[in-house]
Every structure is written in structure tokens, then in C-alpha cells.
Amino acid sequence: MLHLKSSINWLLTLAGVLGCGAILAGLAGADHDLLTINVISLFALFITGFLLVSLTDGIPSVSNSLAGAIVLQCLCAFAIAYIINSDILYILLVIIAGQIPFIFKQTVALAVLVCNHLLLSLMLYFHGVELTSFWQFLLQSSLFFAFQIFAFAASRVAVNEAIANKQLTLLNAELVSTRALLSDSIRQSERLKISRDLHDICGHQLTALILNLEFAAKQTEQQSGIANQTLLQSKELARALLNEIRDIVKTIRHHDQLDLYAALNEIKQVLPGTSLNIEIEQSVTIESHTVAECILRICQEAITNAIKHSALRDITVSISRQDDSLIVQISNSQLHQHLVKFGSGLTSISERASQLGGTLSLTQTPSQFVLCVTLPLNDSRGTL
Image 1 (cartoon, helix red, strand yellow):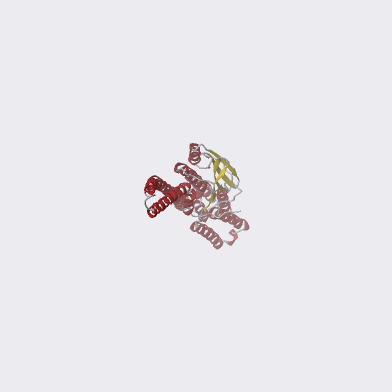
Image 2 (cartoon, rainbow, N blue to C red; image 1 turned 90 degrees about the vertical axis):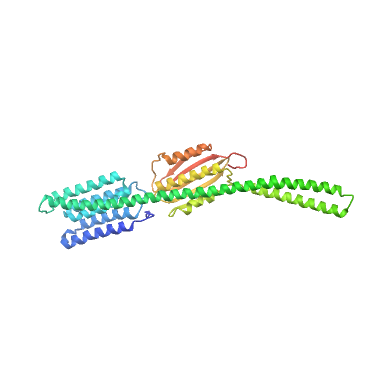
């Protein structure tokens, strides 16, 4: 099943289709006999390859299918040139020049552009294009070569802009998620400070008040029943207030954990066109800011790698408990299985996992890549 590109360059697609249509119309107007079944079939193959590159992410089951589509277009262009011998076919090379920056690195793309032009020029020059002189042929060839360079440069600018935009989007996602975690950490610190102040200051004062009330009640026990009763009631109220404060402190400390889901959800909000599913078990509690930040960085790096290296944008982040370990698993869909190389991203994830005494494992199938980090739990409560 073919997958449409997440962002389709409709102008490039329209230009290519109109270019092919213009060539067919020009050939039909010049000589109807030129449009044989072979020529029409070759044009159909050329347009198929062009649409495969411009509209889709390739054939999932075929590795490097987009590069194959470029090769198919080149072969079709040369075959048509061999049959027709018309310099109007340079337009096909202009169409190809507009696609290759999206498929190949710059040096390879430039080599393809130059080789295509030289080969087609040689075919047309030695295979029957009628020109008054070699210089006239060279002038026309150079003119079409300039058009190819222009198409190549325009597409290259679009590629660089798309790369820069992706990098900025990923950086922004990391910043907003880190900001969310930092804000939650600050709130946690403030709650902890308030709970300590309540316990240490108010608790101490109330305890002293209760002792004073008990002493005053004993002093007035034989003198006035009403006054003694009032003091006893005041003591009970103070004791109830002290118990309330202690319950509040326990509640604050019991919920004193970082909200990793909110931080990851911030990434989801700023990644348009990406399906990011977040699954965190309720039994998972993280109280250390250092640990939470480390897990967040691992997730950020894994999400960034998935977006960079996979044309599909279906990512799942799962955090769960398993026996005495915390499992952080990031999986993403992919078009085909590929060789895994430890670049800066995977190396960074492995180092962060090692800092917490954890391990990194990678598994993949033709349709899915799974990154799994296992971290040891520090205590019997299952917290980090």
C-alpha cells in the first residue's frame, strides 16, 4: 500500500504534469506519426515514476523505490529520445532535475544531472537532430542545461527549507516539553517547601499551644468549671487543627511526583502531521527531577530519530513497570527494515540509560522499529 507524502509539493507535481503534456502536444502538432504506442507507453511510464516520487513515500516493500523511480524516468527519457530525436525532450530532464534533490545528496544529485544532460546531448547530436552548426546545437543544449540547473537549485532550496523547518519543529518540541517538566518540578519544589513549613512552623506552634492549654486547664480545674471547659475545648480544637495540618502534609508528599505525561504531551501538541501516542501506567511514579529529565531526554531523542529516519509519522511512547524495572519503550512504523547505525542520537540514549544503571535494546521488523530502555527501580514502592 502506497503512503502519500505528509507534505506534497503540488507546484512541482503540476509543473511536471504540464511539462509532459506540453511535450506530447508539441509532438502531436508536429507529426502525428511520432506518437506511436511505444512512445505513449514510455511517456506513461515516465509520468508514473514522476508521480511516485512527487506524491508518495515510495513502495513500502521495495527498498530505495524512489531512487528506482528516478532511474525509470531517465531510461524512459533516453528511450523516447532514441525514437523521436527531438530537442524538446530536454524538458524531461528539467522535470527530473527538479526531483533529484529530494532523493539524493547534493553531490550525487549533481552527478545525475550532468550525466543525464551529457548522455541526452550526445544521443541527439549523433542520432539525427538537424542543426545548421555545432555551435547552434551547443547553444540550445546550454540553454536547456541552464533550465535544469534552475529547477535543481529551486528544489534544493525547498529541501534545505524543509530540513531547517523540521529541525526547528523538533527543537521547539524539546523546548516546550522541557519547560513543562521544569514548571512541574518548580511546583513540586514549592509544594514540598509549603508542606515542610506547615509541619515545622505551624505544627510546632500548635503543639506548644496545646501544651499551654493543658497546663492552663489543670490550673483552673478547681477554680471554675466553665473556664476549665472552655480551655479543654480550645485544646481539642488546636489538636484537631494539628491533625488536619499533618494530613495535608501527608497528602502533599504522597502526590509529590512529576507529571511526565504532561511534558510528553507538549511534544505531541507541536508536532503537526505526527501521530504520537503516549501510554504511561498509573503505577509508575517518578519523584526525582533528575530521573524524570533523563527519561524525557531519552523520549525526545527517540522521537527525533523516528521523525528523521522514517517517512511514516506513527510513534508510540510507552512507560510501564515490569517486576523491579521501569520499561521505557518507543516504537514507530517504518516502510522497510534498514541497517541500524549508532549515531549521536542512539549513543546519547545509551549513555543516559547507563547513568541510571539501565540498558538499551533495539528490535525491528520490516514494518516497525522498537527502542526499549530498561531502568532499575530504586525501592520497594516502585519509584524513581
